[in-house]
Figure 1: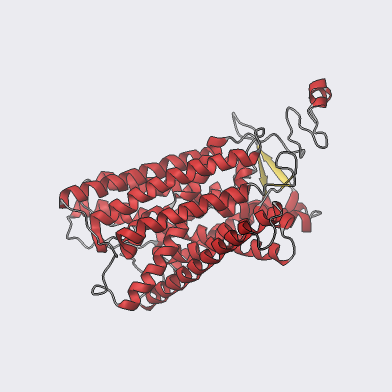
Figure 2: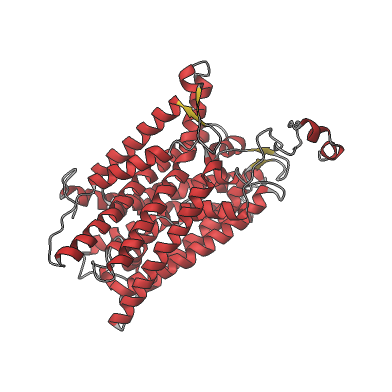
Length: 479
């Protein structure tokens, strides 16, 4: 395979040959991938340390000092293990030279086929759509927090400072309309690195504020079993505990874009090796952050830990620090929204090009000169459909601005099928693991246990949304 390359035939022609690479092209005829362990880790951290980190103190408060950290650790282990199984499915057959699967759906098609492909596509793309809504809500909450913080600062802590999330959601939507015109994943690396830096910024500030609050209180809040049944009813305690599982699952979810991230990685070494390392680095870093943020937030506020850590510090001094943290969240979510939506954009555009290949509207690209850069290729279909998508997610966010419940529901719906079921089933097929063997049984037990957790978390989150809807006015003032 490399013999031709060394002989100089491909190098001279600079064209891809079947089964071989060249200076400019990979073995599949596409332009050389340039991703590394660090860009893949940045993409994962951008996707993982999202707004989910802010609800972890609340989730820990529902479960308590024993179950809270234990559940977080359990989710991190399951996410790492199943992500490693999924990374092995990027190529079918040989892990170095086998056929590439460019998307999660391609991997399912190659390994499982049939109705499971459609089921996977439905769950994956609905989940990505839901994440876009969750991130719009989270960004507007942080923008509102900055506005209210500055209002309290000017008018005093007793001022009402009412604020509506609607204008902030619109502003976030406008930014996303512009950024969604970035054609594909490969060109997002800079946005991912900025977003990853921002996620560390606000996580560290949240952690520091939690430590400061514990020092001020001179004691650790909370209890071994979480919020007590006197404060909430027995039923509420059960629903809230289930919802907390969904929140933690959401905080770790990124499997639905793992294959797409892996498709940006260069080889050699084999993409699966790089991806397993990137997953280990990312999950280890995020788990450390999650443990610290969740536990310090709970220690600071005890059973009254807020649903969103950074909007729950009240608006005490230092105002500027809370503002920096919330601004970092907004910048991070701007990037994370794109990282999650790119696979969905690519899927729709690929489908449209396949179905309506003769249409000028779908395929025509207009070159717009950009001084100092290569000309930007504007595709009219891409411009219109991505704009409609962003408008739709923004309007739904305005109608359902319940951060915690939406986050819990998304985490629940995406966790079992995308993070556990499909990776386990594909790995069994790929590695030809015999039915009823010890390894097969262990994998099925893992999958079954995660299904039970998912059902419980979904039930808890739906109960939360129903409760919120009773006292909710659409497009009304939120605070």
